Image (cartoon, rainbow, N blue to C red):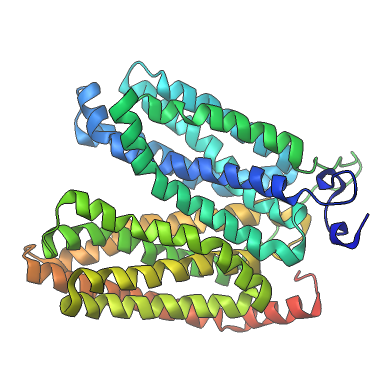
Length: 426
């Protein structure tokens, strides 16, 4: 076996000694794409579902909420379960459940059945989200961990960006059921790739002690800082997605087609920035890149509060590009910093906690930052909408300043020193 494959499990090494990283990464990428696609593809179908089931918006909204709430509530526990029962086994179970639930969604005879099937799909998604990231620590060489995290971030952004467009095309051509049924063949493919390419779970002797589920993880300052920063940064990102459409439509007077086109720019930037961001993390180290990413997002928020008034649409889009590109860098850097050197018995639960932190931030961005914008924009006239934008992203800048303080704290510096020294971080 050559030197390049020393850190790669035997199951991931092809004949001739070359690690089959491309297939490992393909299986992880598809396992990350599907839950993100499941989140975004249903949103565009809500008006169609309301008509198909003769239901009000408040009722069909549960098609989205059932999925999000189930995923958010269970993702941390799913990671812990993977640590105890085997990550590959649970990831395959999650893929099988997600695929089955997607089929049930597509065949649902009523809105109640559809909402129940979406909750089941959310359970599968929780397993996939928690365990996909955990596999980076054991199936990818440490020197490539940043690139792998960047790829997973890109796939998450691709799923978010692709969902509305793909959903619209499928609904127009084949009807609403197609937006759920399309995940069935993709889920089967992901299941086959995971079964073939990811390392098998190690057998645990019956006499070996099981990891204690009550281990005080949150006493680790590095972990708590990483989770807190993830909540804050995701809150800021969601603010752009919630406030942006209102500003574009009511502040700048754009039609909905143009609003959709402009709002797709952010996820596309994040998708293309993910892999280069991961390479920067591999080259310059995760702790330093976390600081760079937060500083870039802070600059973008300040610009978003100032530039639109002077430059209109261009003044809105340029800061959005800055914010989302640096968000991709933050995701790659922070996830790598938290997951690097984590002991094998903790990878699943910590991966689950990272996903939980991100989801809590997205929920907070939609609710708290949305409320700030609503309060500041008052009656909704163009001038008031512009004021609401400035106030919202002034608040976002404050959140990012807090995140920068956490990034520069002693726990984060200790992590950087341990990485450079090759320590285990525990």
